[in-house]
Length: 424
Ligand SMILES: Cc1cc2nc3c(=O)[nH]c(=O)nc-3n(C[C@H](O)[C@H](O)[C@H](O)COP(=O)(O)OP(=O)(O)OC[C@H]3O[C@@H](n4cnc5c(N)ncnc54)[C@H](O)[C@@H]3O)c2cc1C
Image 1 (cartoon, rainbow, N blue to C red):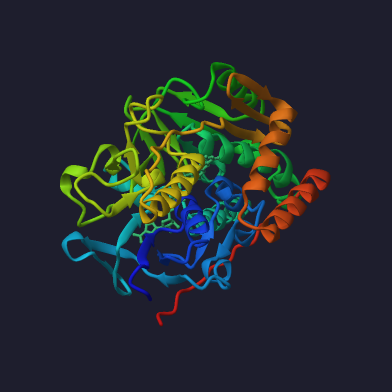
Image 2: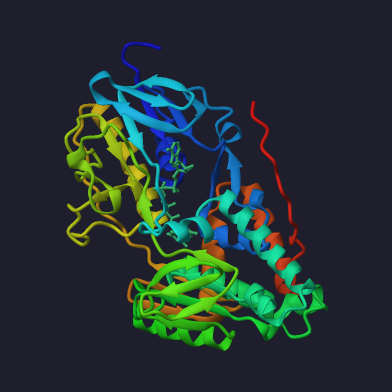
């Protein structure tokens, strides 16, 4: 390594980390080490399809080592971030230590159970590939059990599913579960003569589904979900989940074996950063260049950070893929600008819109002032999601699976795999 070269350690290979590295790797003045707790990058917007057995995990994930195998200035270290020692420019990982000239966090968020221990213990989250595999196994096992039990109450509990959180993830998983129930149950589980014995509930403490989207999108989505047979309960706050009962703040209860948790996230904890830099929902406060407050060479990007300098987003940006991508790309340009003694650019988010899919041929998209719904929105959604997958292998596999499912009205990935972990 020559003296002019800078060591950049990137913790987290999600949207922000990967887009930063893609830009920075073109410049061999930077020696980059990517650290991630997983050995692969994955695409969270399609996690719900893996959870429901509509896509394989490998359709939406890709190994880091393969991604970077022909890049000389990038190395990968699998490991969990434990703490940073800013005075020594050093990070401690579960798999050793690294020193840096620049440290970048793109560690994202984790599920937030708002201190409800029973919910944390008994609900199934939908945040990571591991969660998605667990959720798929869990759902399929509850249906298998429902085919066996002769107790109608038990059967109803097994076939009742409650999704907490009516944001895009909650809408998407309840929509796909309804699709399974309305189509696949009858074919795969002939023992379930009356699949309507249970119900799918979508619950939220807010008064609308898809809170951040336009009113037109909210209304269309609400109607479409009801049309699929989903029971929507709004203004309902989950308080507990114990003895197979979801308990709400107003005392109402739903008996169920399945609570799917998409109701909140909190940033991954980053010990060692100045306590004064930790803001709302544990997001790290950064300046207009994503520099962490109170530090001079540590950056935080995407979901892990909160920036209040962008005039259109004084309360911070929404936690979306595009924010993370754009911040990663700009930081790469800014680190190169510092190396060239050029002026850095401040981050201004280019809002490309939001969208959600409710079911086959039913979606909503708000792009600028334009609103799309139905098949048009579903096609836009499909195109953008395929386009955004990390490489051609994943794009082609996902497109093929979707095309097959669209024509056959079925997919065949409803396996219950139970991996056991052997310690190395
Ligand atoms: C189910 C779901 C659906 C979503 N759908 C959409 C959507 O449709 N559109 C949209 O714009 N956004 C969507 N989002 C939000 C979007 O995924 C995030 O905004 C985006 O992923 C943030 O990117 P990021 O790089 O900041 O973090 P992430 O993409 O979350 O990446 C974080 C990375 O850090 C790694 N990591 C975390 N902690 C550690 C640690 N301690 N040590 C080492 N590595 C660590 C993780 O393994 C991961 O690779 C969705 C999110 C979820 C969970």
